[in-house]
Image 1 (cartoon, rainbow, N blue to C red):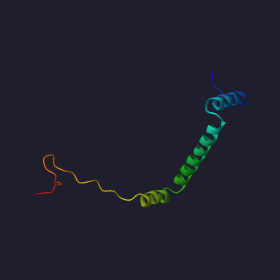
Image 2 (cartoon, rainbow, N blue to C red; image 1 turned 60 degrees about the horizontal axis):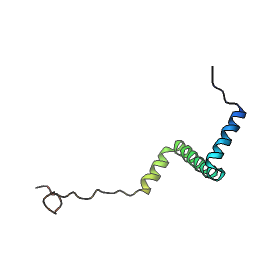
Image 3 (cartoon, one colour; image 1 turned 180 degrees about the horizontal axis):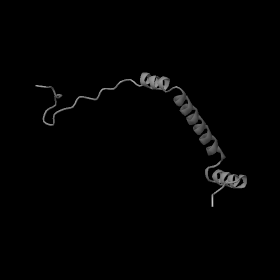
Image 4 (cartoon, rainbow, N blue to C red; image 1 turned 120 degrees about the horizontal axis):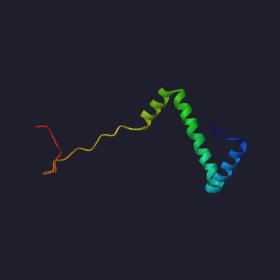
Length: 78
């Protein structure tokens, strides 16, 4: 027997969600979901442009030099 959700069930589920989270929280949640969907569609439409934008926004970071356990000078090849 397949499980079907009709309009009445959707209204009941929506009322329960509003009772749990509140109308203000749902508005901000809807805005966040909408922005995420928009960003996803943009990334799927032009993945190369999005990758280049992320690479240019994040500067390259080098790890700090490692130190020996028995001295305070950085490791250098002998």
